[in-house]
Image 1 (cartoon, rainbow, N blue to C red):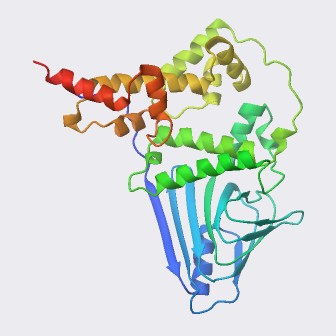
Image 2: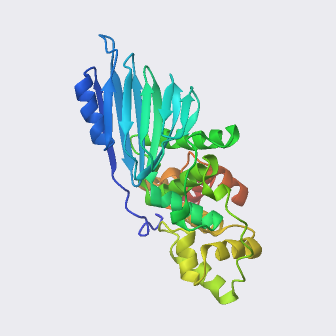
Image 3: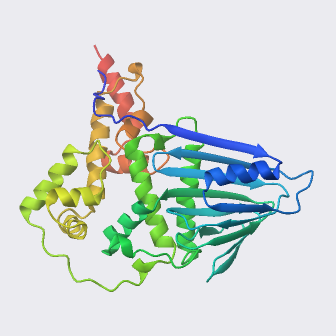
Length: 339
């Protein structure tokens, strides 16, 4: 018996771009096309100089990787209209705005300023970068800190602590690893939405911003039984779609902060945690109904419901059902073949 896949959202297309060059003018033009508003100047170019750049976009997330052999350059950049953060893999990077200057070493995380002119200088380096819409990060700040999205301002290019910097770079590494695959899990809309939210949370938590200095706001008020029923009904009927806490709150007729509080109080989880429970149940149902002979796999079924096998999906599943998802799939196959 094959699992019903009528609810599976269509995969997002993956766009890849890359170039390798030893020519300073050619490289300048390629970088200009990737990052509008930059003015690149190369220095100390020699016969061994070369730069390699790769970029992969899946939905709203773009992962860039740039590496050079001795190819020192300076870049002046206009303010971005998106959020861009990265990690130094090799070499060093000088970043300077009108009010800040930082020198980064291998392993360190950093954020490009959103609304300030930026000067960069480096050479013989390797960096991994992620780009995402500024509106996504603003929505996370509003959801978890209760501020107006327009009030979000980042105040430093480096993390608030080593621990939160490591958390951000772990998320960055997971996304880069996935997008390097021929068929990344991030091409599935539910996975992309979940990972985009996790990335935005990691950024808001790691890099100093106005959510860290906002005043305490008193309790969000009660959410009635009818509103909770509406929230739960919305989650259960839209579990196959990319939804957010703001969507759930709108369906319930309340605020994101109030619905967060209500789910904590009544279900000991967040709205997105409750959504994950429902999606896990759907995965379990589909694994039980699946037939591997029809091409069903754990990875495909998990991705259908927004889980990446590279994440904590297997641990979540085992904690909930006491077995690995692959064991459920094999058991379903054996049952189908029983005379």
